[in-house]
Length: 74
Ligand SMILES: [Zn+2]
Image 1 (cartoon, protein in one colour):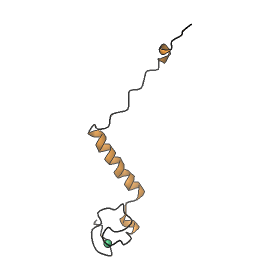
Image 2 (cartoon, rainbow, N blue to C red):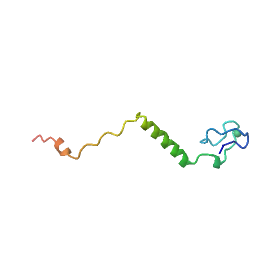
Image 3 (cartoon, rainbow, N blue to C red):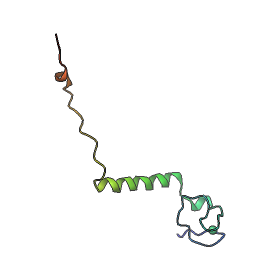
Image 4 (cartoon, rainbow, N blue to C red):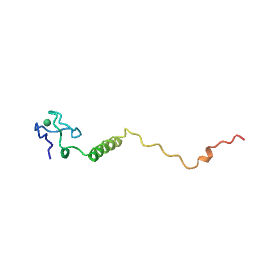
């Protein structure tokens, strides 16, 4: 499916916009990305970045034996 502005007949490249980039006509809701679709795209983007290793994994959680860290002065 191609997304074309029904006023100027140009292709809509950025479906996140509410208005056509060329003529400023309102883009019908059915041609726009839904909030959910936007979030999915966002997820895919973040996911692909993670796979490239640019984002470090969360630090390793400490073991449960933290009582040994306590130091009693008395
Ligand atoms: Zn247009």
